[in-house]
Image 1 (tube, rainbow over the protein chains, first blue to last red):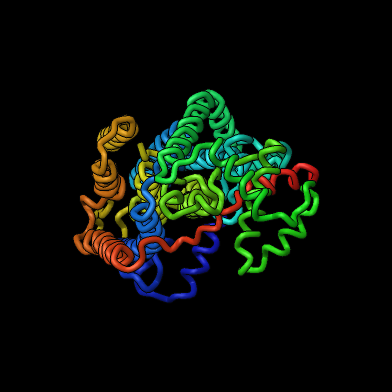
Image 2 (image 1 turned 135 degrees about the vertical axis):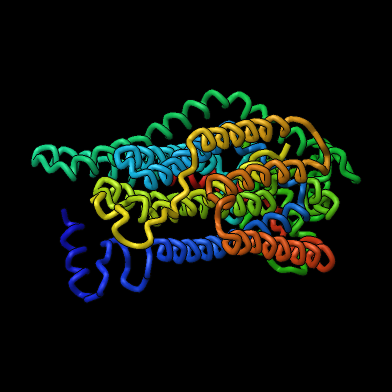
Length: 402
Length: 129
């Protein structure tokens, strides 16, 4: 075994009196001392992780304090079913991880490999469901501030790139890679490689199980989702109409016609030279013309049917009105910025966890761990539980706002 | 390689405390039940207590994960102290920042929604494909 060779080489370098177990670094007296030092190190690392996420939770808290209605409204767009399933998957992976630590301590090597593979598969399923969630939102234009382009009248943008395929691409490549690895090692008959490639192939394929699960739940939950969207729409409309200077749609129309006839006598009857007007209106002092341009833009939008949610023109755009709108790009966009930032960084932590778990799995096939040396499994386990812990807070805070 | 794990070296006393399987399963069961409760309570309207209830349940879950899955119940007090103190500092950070922003700035997010950005974006995105 490769491990044996390097270990014996290591023993040669340090001419100690006592004989070293190969897993004990030479600067430690006992395996227990080594374990405790490593554990202190990983706890300190976890503290930095908590402080790191604390910054994002702080951003969340400030924005939620300032704009509670934005959170209530935008949270409707998050699919609770998918979030709940992902919570369950992550909790289960925590269970298998804790069990894996136990297996490494009791030296059940086969079971340890199995538990690590189960943990990895759960991580992949989590990412698969996440891929469905993200691609669905990107299609609807529910993007971070600056890119946010959701339109309740056309919730599903036609065309656009196939986001799901792009997210899946690296995982497809990984799956093909592991299958090739498995086939090649089967042909060569290399037992160690077969033992590594087999569970890893299952792990790579379970991403697509996650994608399937997400697709199923998303389609099954599409009705409730539509209702949620409509509900959000209704909220928005009611907020609009209850405004202090509440003019309804017809009133708006009248306003426009009025502005059209009075302020822009010089303007032409055809709407073709909007550009000229726009240019004139770019002068900050030309407020009347500005209003007119806004009105005309809105009118042409209404005519072309692409009229969107913001029914307030400049005159009605008082602070009071803005307060009630949660679905405006800058406000909803900030919610989705926070959403993508927190869940995205969490997903990156899942990816990092997958990387170290693969390393553990290969070492577990090599049977590196025993009851004096299970530190790496324990440390990775602690990291994995912390990632789970963060999701425990993220899930209700983002998905379960009423 | 198991021969290395024999007690030929060191003082021979085991420092591993394997968690009993039934306990792991019980903790997992409790966590699942608490998740279901969290999802269930979301459909009721508790007004401003919403966040408190949600955070309370999440903290119970976090304590379960910490105490049993992360072995904090059997860990050295110093490790527990380090871990818990980080939450204390995050709490201080959030409380001070929140109270500061409450007192100084009402809302600092720029509003640039006079013209909805979705409407112009749509016609341009269709021919691009």
